[in-house]
Image (cartoon, rainbow, N blue to C red):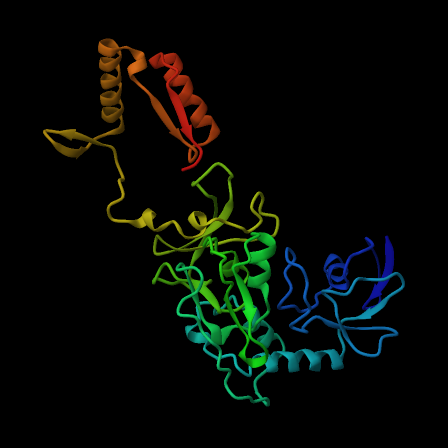
Length: 348
């Protein structure tokens, strides 16, 4: 353990922690944009600059390891102006289209501009001629290159969290852009989408949209497999608009999802979705009660068992069911039907 002082407050932290981690642990807020707890720090946005006693120039807090006896200042008129200038530089090529941007109301850049009271733009530069690919690496995600602040979160998340690395920062300077890595296929997990702090990556599946304050967010468990990933359904007018995640302590996935969990929910409101049991009568599928449907199945199973034997029947269950459901199903097949012909598909 080491001791350091941040904003005249003496802290004891674990050796190896960064200044930002030490400040966060003490409830001292330092503004950030490119930093995310589950990703390696790069210090590219310069929003987290702090003053350290004995060091001539401000340094970034997210990638500077705290040292024993260090004296840190996180708030000063000079730091405030540095952060304001960093934000203004980001806005040089960033369109001020907040009213029509999907991220309006939940954009980190928008929040910081509001917090620092930026109402003018003294800097100017020729509009960047970024090479926008015909489409993003995933067909489920829309890319808006002009909104990108090149924080690199998406690139790091793809490589460090998912272990794929299908996107990278290409070119240099004002012409830099997020583009595909040749020969590496995207799995459309949406990890990049979930960590983007601005509106550079948006959900491209549904045309219907809802602002953060318009949608009701309900935390639930994904039903696609047995992992039990947690996420939030964003619902408006009784329709699912999108899926969002929270990486802060939401076990077991910590904000990560697969392509099915993040994008595969259009079937919920599909007009052809079955909503009640159906039994074929005179060649026509007819809605019936659960009691009638289950009785029909029981009669058919009984008839097959009596005429062909129990081993003429097989049961196939799903990884989408709970462990308890699967246990009861195999128990039913073995004890009630009288066969060990039971299989389970854990591969969907």
